[in-house]
Structure formats: structure tokens, C-alpha cells
Image (cartoon, rainbow, N blue to C red):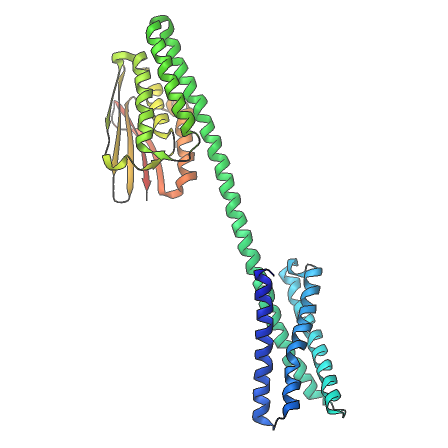
Length: 342
């Protein structure tokens, strides 16, 4: 027997036993009772359970639980009235059977008794329908949460799948520029690219990695780019040791570093520098990428996968707990900042 059925039968037995006991108690206070009277009241227990269980069978058979609430209310009232009349008639029949005399039915008393029974059956219906309403509401809420989670997972996978082609495109461009200029450096670059791709394929399977793992990828990428740019590219790391074990989305910092080189440093004949800085705070941590360059309308519209991808992934993974900004730090540098709060 399922948990729901156990709850149902327990409530049926306890509820109708309590109803019969209360009525017997007040009857005993008003009249002298004998064993036969007690038996008559005890009959209410199986009678109430039988009638309401038959009612439940009809409700389930005709899917009344799925009917709009506006239509459920009159159904409950009408059903309660019919069950009350049935309960009253069967009870009178049993009383007459045990007493061997026909009991005179007073219309006013009968109406009063039926109306009191209507209230009992309405309460039963409200409890039964209410339980299923909140149970279905909870199931729907869980399904919606699962759907939302699945949707986010699909979106995240889509965003992550954009990064590898984006990264490959930029890296292959770097190596292509070296093939004619310096074949030996091109071979070294290909080896480094192979190492980077091996790491990115492993990272691609995870939703989060540690910042330390991410920075290993960033360093490999910068080494690869340094072969192409030589003295035109300088970089440095200012890393708070307390941030190394914190989780970040894979390739998020690396993608912003790519953008800083592609849209900033590479535009200047003399090159430039890029700095990666991390800071731990009480509320979370910050990651800053500062690179040579300036933001203009064309640069923003041409920022492509990197900026948009970073914004979308942060929103999906952290909601309002994370933010991303990209702006000119001064007349020579641009700063990208990621803030992730606890």
C-alpha cells in the first residue's frame, strides 16, 4: 500500500471514529444510553467510511480533481447534500431495524440533522480536495524547477560549446601568422595548443573548476600568444592565494583574456600589457582583467562571443549574485571585472 493510501485510510478511520465518539459523548450527557445505543453510534464509523470511499471512487473515476475550482465548489456542495441524505436514510433504517419499531421522523429535526451532516461531508471534501490540490501544486512546482534547471543546463552547454570554436579560431590565427615568419616557433605553438586543447576538453565536462585550474589554462594561452607577439605582449598575475580554491565557470577568465588581446593589444603596433588580478572579500571575490586598449562603439559591437557569453553564463549560474562589467579604466587601458558573491 502506498504512503498516500496509508494516510487516506488513517484519516478515514480516525476522522469518523472521532465524529462518532463526539456525538456519543454529547448524546450520553443528554440521555441515558445503553449498549444498543452505543452500537448504533459505532455503526457511523463503517457507514461514513463506506459512503465517502464510494464518493472518492467517483471523484477519481471522473477526474473531478482536475476540474476547474469554479466547477468543483458546486460539485462538492451537491455531493455533500446527497451523501448526507443517504447517511441519514441508512442510519434511520438501521435504528428501526434494531429497535423493531418505526421511529417517527420529524421533518424539522431531519432537516437539521441532514444540514449538520452536509457540513461534515463538506469538511471531508475540503480536506480531501485540499490535500490533492497542494500535492499537485508541489509536483507542478518540482516539475517547473526541473524544467528550469534542464533549460539552464542546455543553455549553459550551448554557451560552453561556443567557446571551443572561438578559442580554436583565435589560436589557429596566431599559429598561422607564425608559419611563414618562424616555422620553429610555429611548431612550439602547435605543441602548446595541443596541451591547451587537452585541458579544455577535460574542463568542458564540468560546470565549475577551481580558479587555479583556470589560471593554468590562461598562462598556457598567454605563452602561446607571446610566441606570436614577442615583446609586444607583456602580462602579469596578481593573484590572492585565498581565491585559488574558489570555483569559476571553465574558460571564463581565459575568454576575457582573449578578448583583451584581440580587441585591445593587437590593435596597437607597439603592443601592450595585460594583467589578471583576483581579490577575496567577505562577500565573495573579484576577478579583474586590465589590458591595453580603449572601448568604442565598434569594439563593443565586435566583442562577439566573449563578453556576451560571460554575461549570459554568470546570469544562468549565479543570478543576481554575480555581475560583469567592461569599461575604460583610463585613456590607455580597459578593465573587465567579474564579481561573484557568496
